[in-house]
Length: 65
Ligand code: SF4
Image (cartoon, rainbow, N blue to C red; front, side):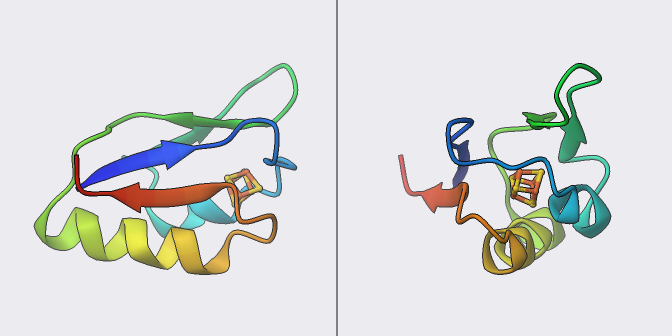
C-alpha cells in the first residue's frame, strides 16, 4: 500500500508523527507532514492506518497502487 498526503488539507497537528516517526515527519517551516516512506506493509502499514484514522483533517489516505 502507498501513503498519500494532501498538504492542502494538513493542518500540521503532528498526530501522524506520533504514530510512527519513521513514516512521518513535519516541515520545519509550516509543520505540514513530510512522508519518510511511501510504500508500507506489515507493522508500518498498521501504523499508517492508525495515522489515517487519527489525522484530524483527513489529510492522509492509503491507496493500492
Ligand atoms: S496528523 Fe494530519 S494534519 Fe496532522 S501533521 Fe499529520 S497529516 Fe497533517
